[in-house]
Image 1 (cartoon, rainbow, N blue to C red):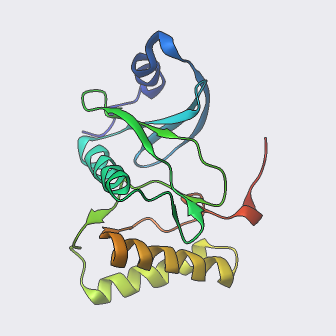
Image 2: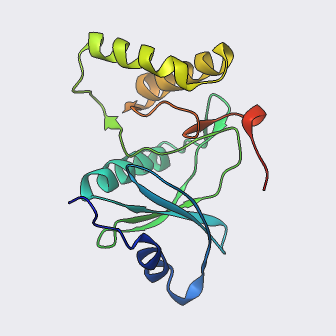
Length: 168
């Protein structure tokens, strides 16, 4: 199913219809492409159904539990979604924040404790300082222990800090 949304910009505009426009691309990754819209939101166009369903399930859990931040990091809220176009619309957030829930697992993980420890250790170098790493690790544990969200994409960009924020 790779390449499902090679035309993600057109899909994004189709999702928005006449009610809004794409303001700019915020980035593209292995999960899909994110766009800032002219309304107070961002939309993500996913590359495949599995990643879309994962992220949708995470945001539904976040909404059910009314999670607005984790360890002082803002969490976007789900506004709406389209199962056919594989698009989520979420609220805009500013640093510090956590986002990108496409690689999560809910309530249990398929990884062994050793695999989890190895994964976490491999993420350490993805942060600029030891303090950022400790905060990211704490976010990972809080999501897992208190919300049943196994967050498997620990890196800068997905977890952003106020001291890393750049303004356009």
